[in-house]
Length: 305
Image 1 (cartoon, rainbow, N blue to C red):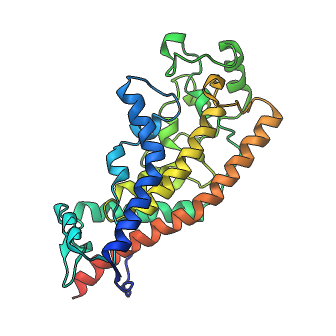
Image 2: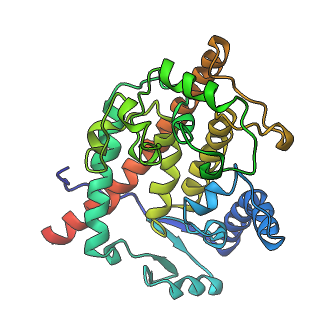
């Protein structure tokens, strides 16, 4: 993408009372997710659904709780100086604000790549015919000892699972799901996926592509507003629940009623959720694109000045 010069948004000045209220609201919101996870970790307990959001997505709970206002916001009051412990902040005439110019060259390159990826996904038609079979392909033809969540029973026998995979079209478009397919399952996928090919393969109907909006948001921290990161996490949370309900694992003892994608009714239910997540992901993707544009435009103006 070629950055064009553009006007920056006017600086929004927040009083100490205002920004501290926003910070408190953010912390209260995310602790609903982070506190139970940390309590389980302290007890040495694992969770086959929710741990994924804190392990695969390696953004620590403490980082998720930390509030950042995003670009073009000035924080006033004596306590705002605490933000100067991050090198991305600078003093202003009357307070503290993010210094977009502090974005390192390597991260600017990433932002440009991410902008192109998000635009490519936005432009590509959504596909709703995968029916969550990626989780089935991850245990296809494995022994019980090889299964990732071996502590939890499968809803179907190994023979039935293999038949479901073989008799339904595997059409995963998300490399980071495909790379966990078992060796026998990979040749069954309609697409031979690669990481380098992601901008040509990712599509917005994919649950994991929408879940990854959280990853892209936190990778832009602290320049990403924490409200955006939390909004993306909320979507990822809901997607993860459906992802595992549609898996071959029987998680009813944890309160996750199966979506039996091996049936016509289950496929229809899964597609309904998939379309809903696609719609919810659209405005989040747009906000990420706008943030990338803001960061890239800063570089363009720096060069022009």
